[in-house]
Length: 340
Image 1 (cartoon, helix red, strand yellow):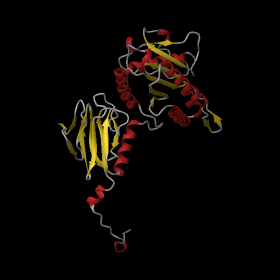
Image 2 (cartoon, rainbow, N blue to C red; image 1 turned 90 degrees about the horizontal axis):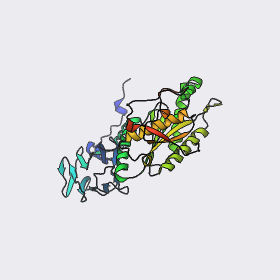
Image 3 (cartoon, rainbow, N blue to C red; image 1 turned 120 degrees about the vertical axis):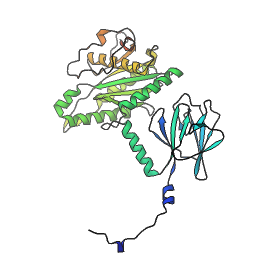
């Protein structure tokens, strides 16, 4: 069917004006924490630095507290160093005074590299969606394993340098295979989504929840002591147990076992993955101890009683993607005479 051009109103659009409509400055992370993240420059003056109260916070210890500022001037953007320790670079050149930013140019602060760009609302939404798809689990909406691994490395390094507490809580849904076998895989997927929602509603804004793999989830939290980490995990366990999840008219009973590892209990730990391995061993102990419980671990001498190759009945074989080294092993920490 041909379109009747005689009745179609033709609208002429100025390409230059259209291209500038609604376009604002953005920074895309090329190197550093949260690679691919899109940061907008919403104000006339945007300060970039390591402090939390600046417009653009950069998680990089080589970045000064107030490192540089990007300002809007006469329809374009300029960057100026604020006396930083390591300097600010644009296209590889050290910034001295004000430097105009052009679309596509690279900006470096410390060890973090950005790409400056001008984007309209549609472009920003598309960029954000692409980034979210790369760091989020498609089923649950939690962060994915790759994103968690990257954040664990950076958060652990930060905790070690600044001597701040960091806690990793690894949780596994009990008897998940039985849930799939009894109610079907669609119900199993629904359970995963509901558990993810309960976890995300239980944590603070600054905490991170990720789907670690299969029916495993991990929470990373900082700023709480070792006992606080244990209590936090216990609250999560109770929330999961109380959750009402229905398959048709039948309630699906769901519980979770959790293992906790904390830097306070692991003063000799030198890698984030060692802390994760300690949480994994504690989780395995929780499974062997009866499930629907919390156990806390600390690195130490290997204890075969808490980490054997025997899989608890009704569970899938435990994941061992990397060989366990003596430094990564953990022994169970328990308060004498107390059960979770």
